[in-house]
Image 1 (cartoon, helix red, strand yellow):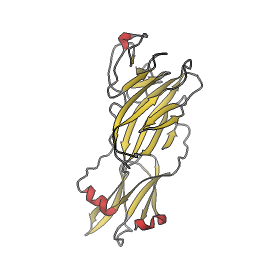
Image 2 (image 1 turned 30 degrees about the vertical axis):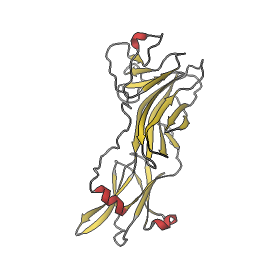
Image 3 (image 1 turned 180 degrees about the vertical axis):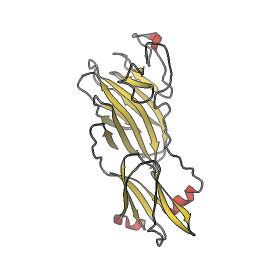
Image 4 (image 1 turned 30 degrees about the horizontal axis):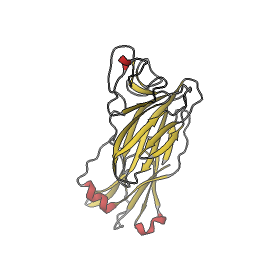
Length: 280
């Protein structure tokens, strides 16, 4: 599993990752009936935490009923809330009061020590998924990583005092209708670390689709690249999968929109062509 993060004041170069390889002939058959959307579908419900809404103060709601305030206990649609019951429970914060909890929209989650949230989604064997989310440390304690579990794989994700965009990319090993996604603040008792969590998204690739477009009496191949806007990708091709050590660079592209269309005007003499995309 690959983990990448981005902050407003520093960008690190992630390792190269082959996202997908798609055969032109196969992709054309699929494209005849498959619609194209401008944004990949989020497989998680209420990942932006805009539910449940509330309008009366105080502008937070605990997500479990505890001795702190039983009247403020509130369920979180789409998620199961975890809490060890020792320190302050997790809560849903609302703008304009809780700017350290909300990154986008009106609501965000604060995970206190010993708390977490979890949900499930369906995986398909060998399908590629990307989980993205924003984190921010509250307070001045020495930060400990947030533990993220997805489809049985645990990753410790670092936290800073600035809102930071993270993503984890993985290939599902099996088909599982109830694969688990879980975010846990596992800091020890007595550590008052609180983590702001917002904008959780889980999307499934393929990243590339190949099609033919009639142009001036001939069929011109093009690929549709669905990725992160502002991120840089290398698109490569090979004319035979028996020669996959000879991938050729088609182009390097910074996505200005997603999906982004790339026309391959040099492939008219090739009976077939295979493409792959790698994020740089």
